[in-house]
Length: 128
Image 1 (tube, rainbow, N blue to C red):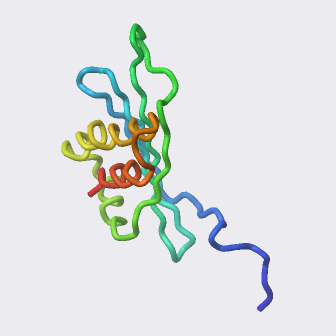
Image 2: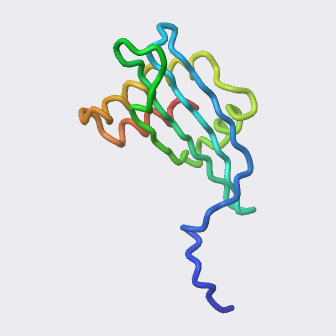
């Protein structure tokens, strides 16, 4: 068989399923954009979380641009959790984690006081 010259690791997989959630903290100071996207090439399934943190600026009445946006590839061991969230939505503890610890870790990364690893791990933990 001849080579097609396409690197399979960089080939874009077709979107099979995508769900979006918007979470706003009770105090109205943070908004989280949370998306789960399932891609598949017919054999391999990949889930990706898109996470965007918006913060209300002093004196503002609407949210501006995101403080930080991250895309996190979900560990294959959490694929069933991702599927469950996509089908059933976020539970109250998952939503609380998204607006609390995950948002805090993302904010720390944006501020330069946190690590990319800590932020992506905390975002992935939303679906645990």
